[in-house]
Length: 275
Image (cartoon, rainbow, N blue to C red):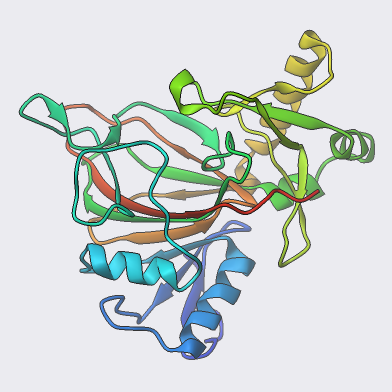
C-alpha cells in the first residue's frame, strides 16, 4: 500500500499500487457504522472496487450486519451444512469427521465474477479470514474497467457487440436454461464499462463459431491478466475484504492441502447485468 490519501468522512483510505484496491484504517466493524461512514465506504468501494479492513475481530452477526449496509445479504445458492446464520457461507479445505466444513478446497480457482452463471449475479461480496495457510491462498483481483479501457479500438467495438454464455463447471450448480450476459457491462452507479468474461465461468460466445469463440476469449483473458490490472492480497487472520463483482474478477491461488484455510463469506446478488 502507498501513502494515505486524504480522509473521506473520517475514513483513513490507503490506496494500493494498482488501479484497484485500498485499505481502510480505523474502523472497528464490531461497532455500528454511521450513515456518513456507510456512505463514505460505498463511495470508496466505487472508486477502488476492493477494500481491505485489517485486524477485525468480528462474529457472524457483525459480518452480516456490515454486509447489510450495502444491500440484502443472501444465502448462497450452494447448500452447506446447518449453521447459525444462513447468510454465512464457509470457504475452507478443512474436514471434520470426514466431512468438509465448507466449500472450494485448496486448488486454484481461476478468474471469475461471483455467480455470473446466474441471470442476476453477484454484486458485492465480503470475505473474512479465520485461519490462513503459511504459504499460498492469495486472492487476486482484476480491474476489468481498466482492462476494457486499454483495448484497441477494433477489439473494443467488437466486444460491445458480443454476449457470452456463463456456466458453472459443476453441472448441478447451473440453472436449466443457459445464462448469457454482455461481454461489456455498464456499472449502474459509476456508468463505467467493464469486460465481463472469465476463464472459470464463461463457456463460450453466443452466436460465434466455436474456434473463433475460443480465440476471442483467449485474447480477452490474456489481455486482462496483465500486471497493471491486478491487485494481489496476501491474507492475514482478521482481514475482512469486500469487493464489487461488477467491475472486477478475482481468483484464489492454490495452497498446500495440509494447511488449514477457513474463511466466512457473505454476498449480495440479484442485480441484472446492464449493457
